[in-house]
Image 1 (cartoon, rainbow over the protein chains, first blue to last red):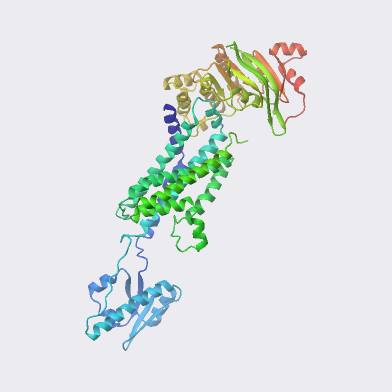
Image 2 (cartoon, rainbow over the protein chains, first blue to last red):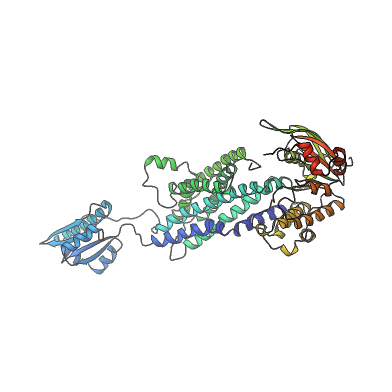
Length: 354
Length: 242
């Protein structure tokens, strides 16, 4: 027990006294969260801006409450003349130019962003149709009520928090176990420990304990930052499932670190191998941006990545109201990864760097 | 139990094509200061590693204090102390934290660890991290870590390599004291003057075999030369090694 405690202390002190480790494990991913969270905060996704030239009755007749309702999606700017407005569209400063000639509403959009052009078309079209119906003086026959299946607050932060946290945990767990293994082998500490009357269980237990501790701190810090009102993360009911999920993810990435640590001869090569493993995996697993736009084969590839499983399940339980049915398969996959990789690491394991 | 601290019989170890240890047998008496000498690649380190229980011999057995050193025997490990070549320290820990950590592996109290630090003259360096210690200080700390649990048998692998003469002499006094307290000490070194002054007996190794064993003075007179260095060169030749 005393051995376990002192080994844990050794690993803890080795980590917190290494300024660059603290920076890269904890502060660096957190900076991404602070930055991305702030950058993409106002992103309602598809708010479009229209430059209006002269009077356009359909727009001018809108009451304050209607404008207020439209504000989420449409912003109207006044432009001096048509050429100016068209130039602004070409430059991408506004999404469309609009003016009216004797009841004919002319709308110009740019072909460079079909999604936004479509949105402008749809909104303006809707307004025109509404005005047409109102002009007939009849009640409309059909009405539409739209709703959203996700939490209405599915803002950028709901996506970034689980993704960046997954990346942070993957880095922390894999780097810590790989670098401990390489450094201790290089310094002959593994040999020295073999010659002390302690069991391998105590060494492994201490390493797992400290890494789990680090991951839980990362989880607490990330959630703590993301739920402050400025960022506005809203946790859904089963968010606490993120605790066992992060624990399983930690074990899986410690095993990744063990394989690399068992293979690498120096800290530098371990560092490089970890970077080229973890960073592309983070991109493919949607830690930084959604992967929905990826080609199909890449999406298939991404499903064999442990981080993808962790990120998806984390997003599910943190911001999509997911429960055990989302978390359990991911935990199973992560633990399987941990078991297989640990077995590989045991095969590759060497006592000496020579 | 016999009175010998180490009994090695017919040790052999092969790495690929290289027969690193080729039938080594020797005995070290309890309380003896024993030196193992040999050029680089002679098989000293592998021999020592087998004897300490770090490696399994292909053939032969090594007994420490009457017990087999392979397979790993934690009860035996409590009775031996090993200082490995190059300092095996935990990164970012101070001298005091290092020795207290090693003490905890053996259920030795922090007070005893601090006293050990005092006895190697490192009390004023207790709060210095391992990478800030000088070569001599690091060696002394490493020896203190090997001795913290008061072992009966101590292995020291090239403890004075890279030290200045002051630090070396200083360390010799420490090693003599360790031995005079009744501990058996096994030392490897490249410095013949060191072996000549410190060791009761030395074994000269080359090509995985022990060529000669005896008290330094006896070896010198047997071969009719002036110093242990001459004995060494006489036995192992003058050509360069790796």
